[in-house]
Length: 204
Figure 1: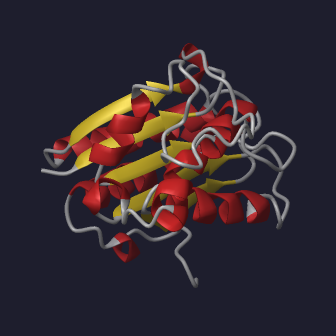
Figure 2: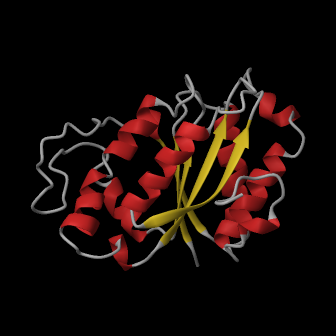
Figure 3: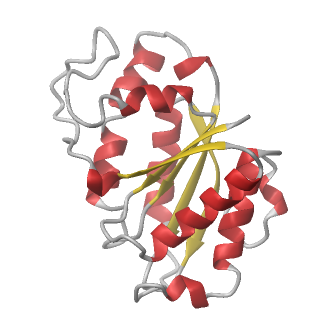
């Protein structure tokens, strides 16, 4: 049974990205996956302070609500980050989570301790933005590549929804929630995300 960890980076409960995350979770649970959904806005934590405290151990010295989350990341087979676009970027809470992956990066690439948790996990990115700009997700996709690599994974798929400006707009965008649910189903079972039409895939 796959263990799936879903981070919701939106500060707004029930917003467009939150709805995508819920659909993803529903699809994954329907296939029997163990899914934990974490709303970052409900945690108290700091971004990386570049203190170098993890350089010798690969363990972050900051003691806050992310401390207990590190083990959950290590145990996960799939990690999903859901964040709306704020000024063509992921939210500040999402970015702080990404920065705190520095300890994992040190452990894997500097201390040469191998993949986190001893396995390569899948990374999935869910996002919605108000504008329909062509470059809306370009920067965040690059960030996601490096984030998932740092936690011993690979960015395998992304669902990127443009034109979702008001709360709940994603419900009216054809196929958006269905694609999110099918992504969750794939994450929990086959891992063949190419079965879901209308999503972003590496090299696509």
